[in-house]
Structure formats: C-alpha cells, structure tokens
Image (cartoon, rainbow, N blue to C red; front, side):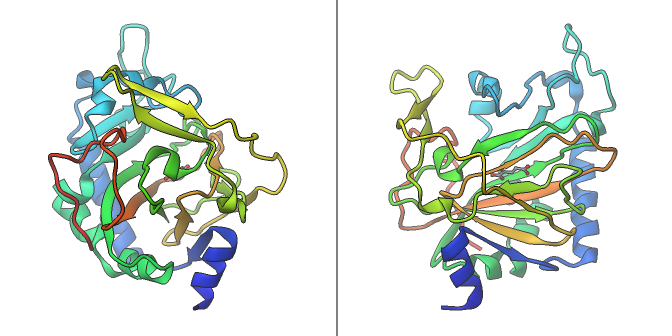
Length: 276
Ligand SMILES: O=C(O)CCC(=O)C(=O)O
C-alpha cells in the first residue's frame, strides 16, 4: 500500500498539496465567473442551507442532479425574493452536473489531478457522479453542518469518495473543511433519500450516537490543494464571517459496479454516468 492509500485508510482523508497548478486554477475561476455572469437572479429563489435542508422541499433542487442550477445563501433575498447583494456575492453553490454538461468543467474534472487522486486512494473504476462549486463568499458564506457524503450519495456497497479542491487558500478564518480523523469507521448515522410515496425527501435516522465534539481537525489548504474524503468520514465547515473568499470545487465519484439506488435524491437516470 502506498503512503497515500495508508493515510486514507487510517484517517479517512488524504491531502494532495499543489495538485492543480496556478494556471489551471485561474482558468477554472474564470469559467466559474462566466457561469455566474450567465445566471439570471430573477429566475431563482432557492436558498441552500444544511441546518434544516429546507432546499430539499423545492423541485428546483430535486431536479438539479442532471443539470446546472444556482442556490443562494441564506439572507441574501428580501421578502419579495429580490437580491440584496450583487449576484457574484450571493450564491452558496452551483450544482450538480457541470462535469458532464459544461465543456470546461468536463475537461477540468477529467484532467489528471482528479484521476490520479482517485487512483491513489484506491478507486478501481470511478464514475463521476456530482460536481459542485461551493462559494463561501466573504461575510455571507454559510455553515456546512457535520455529515458524511454516503448519507447523501448512497451506494451498495458504500463507494462514494469526495474530491474537494481549494480554489482560494482555505483557513480556519474563512471556513476551511474540518474532519474527524478515523471516524469513517463509525456506523453512518443517517440517509437522505426520496420518500417511497414520491412526496419529497426524508432524512432517515439510524439512531447512532451524535458525533463527538472533540477530535475534529481543520484541513487548512492552499489554493490548488485537492483533498479526498472517504464517503463515511464526518466533515463540516464553519460560516465565513471573514472578508476573505473561500471558493472551492468538489467532485464526487462512485464505483461503476456499486448499486446506486433510484431513491437517491440525486437523479442521474436520464444522464448516464461516465468515468475519467
Ligand atoms: O466546502 C465545504 O465547506 C463543504 C463541502 C462538503 O461538505 C462536501 O463537498 O461534501
């Protein structure tokens, strides 16, 4: 086993500093800006928040698995749904299929840093499932509550791995990731799935204990650092109350031979998954 694979097996995460060079970072930042330029704020009112999952009641979110949609931060709209800040400072995220539908993101996600990282942490035949641009804009960037990715992107057997790329320097000050090393070996606490009656989604609670308060470590990362997160590793991030941006890009992959149940919230039935 390589050092990376051993660290990943032990802690549930692996960091690849300098995985993506400065030119590629600048280029994808330009592509992100172009996606926001093209966004018409009057077309959307959905806020993304992980504390109450209220976005999950919206069809706009539930049908975003095979397209490209924009989600606001909490507090950036007035009571009439009008934007209170510039649209470039208002978004929580864009998701969830840029890697298949947007040529620049398709090429970026299928470039060697992501493929190499997937191989290094032991993926054998990865399929690219979900991509997200996570803005964490200065002052308004929201909290991401503690969760595992398997909860949201369920496969049998569990196979999801998240690849999180810093596009700004991410520090404790501007809301970097935090993880609970080794806790990928704990039983998963919940599963977010579509209801059997077709009526939205539910968070199924398996009755496991809460995550401990102690033992969390900040995963500070310079721009260009790629972090692989095991699908059952608890991770979270704090609000960005600072003046510094904390832009990130994430790609979630699953194994080709794992079953992806149809009641996952993210529906890719009309857009077959592809590999690197
Ligand atoms: O970027 C963040 O703050 C959180 C990202 C995350 O939780 C994820 O990609 O699974």
